[in-house]
Length: 282
Image (cartoon, rainbow, N blue to C red; front, top):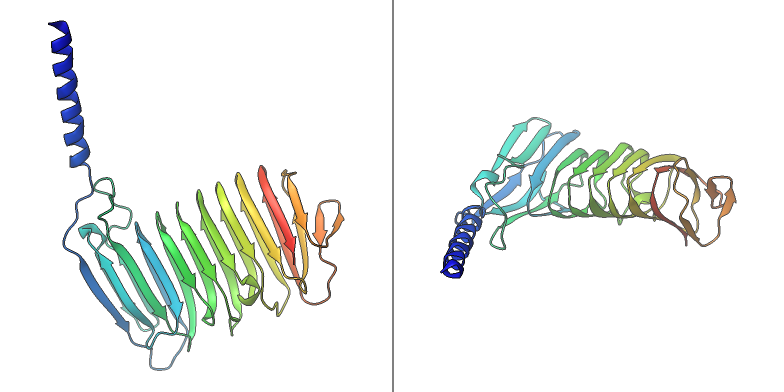
């Protein structure tokens, strides 16, 4: 009799647990598609763009007909996009970007896909997390770039040079992974890269037009830094990390790794306590 009672209690507990799981699944609505066709300002003056999204996939690419062209596809009501406009400012964000009504399932749809203009200077800010991001910024006229991500998987590309000077490039992320390619084409004066635990690749391929500085602060991470063969670079280890692997030709003096190449100099200040660092000069 005791066994039967225990079995019955277990069945009830499992049934209750199953109901609880079902109740905490994120609620969805019919798929909504919002088309974006934001026109250019009439005088093509510098414009600030701000995007805030999470919980999905976010793609950016160059070559919009207007300032921003594309679409947002979603099926979570709280993630409905909002728009803010003024003469030289345009913002798109989810109404409640960090609000979760339950556990996301495979039925969740949240896909942002935009093209951006290459014909005017842009001050670009991207904020979000829990997302898959592909940001192709090749040829955009970026005067400032600020990317802040939570737990996410992000790829940033500069396949062609930024035609204007970027005053500051900031990339901050939590425990995640990120790959940044063509950073030599970004044409920045200074760059700040801050990350938590994860895997990160910083590829400085491209043409360095002026002396630039990069400050890297990392947690327990696997970090790969790629310097092209013809770039003058110095990487200074200010942290406690000792597991530094090198590939290619480097001059090592104390905690400084130099490529011994002429031209504008890229200085990378590295602050990392624990982890693995791969320095590649190719």
